[in-house]
Length: 216
Image (cartoon, rainbow, N blue to C red; front, side):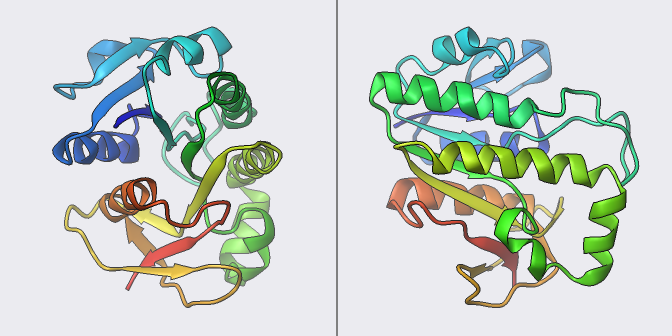
């Protein structure tokens, strides 16, 4: 299978790409600067998924899409300012859905965040408050918008909603919450998210569902 990975230059996207290659898949990705994505074996196209023509070029020959796109910020922290357009993810998703429907492709797995959309009421009150007053509100709003784009599409989509991401290298066991059923912890490793997204893609799990995930 050849997989287009949107967000391949990010911390989670890189892990998805490397794990996909280990599993024997082909990988394509989009980035503004090819020199910053050192993933041997990946087919990297310079550009941005904010541009329709770039997506159309990148998806050529692909069988499925995984997106780990997020808004870039000027620095780390809840109150850092976004350095990319506030509709980056939703525009990129609109472009991707359009191309996939034109080419007859169906399968896409997208990472958003637990606390987005109908999971907002399930956040602990402290984090819910922070998400309303900090720059996270912009991220959540665009995640919600891209989820709506998927819902309106004809694609076989899965939206993966991780809790707080960590950079632990080890693969830890996943807990899943779907439609209010199941308990979640407070964190999940990016490595575990990468494995879970690829598992969803390969097995056809959670089609047109939005599983929240954490480590056990």
